[in-house]
Length: 59
Image 1 (cartoon, helix red, strand yellow):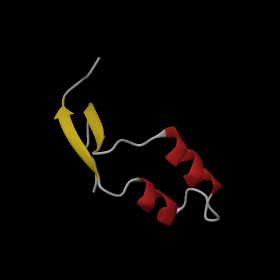
Image 2 (image 1 turned 90 degrees about the vertical axis):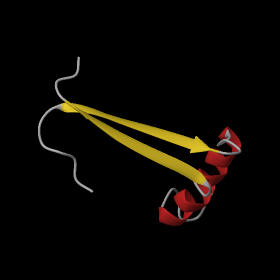
Image 3 (image 1 turned 30 degrees about the vertical axis):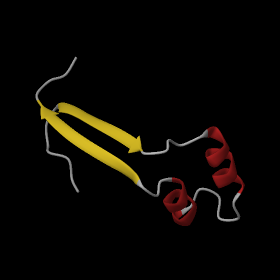
Image 4 (image 1 turned 180 degrees about the vertical axis):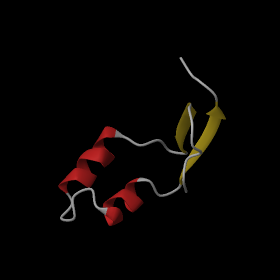
């Protein structure tokens, strides 16, 4: 997806039902594929990412 041209504010929110614990991040970093696509998919499985775009000049 592309961002609209011009100025504005992009807000991203990550919601994970059980939360993402520091231990999970550590384990993901120790995986053989590092933080590649498969490790990120396991870490973020069940999470919801929401993006909203507010056009205009933001402070």
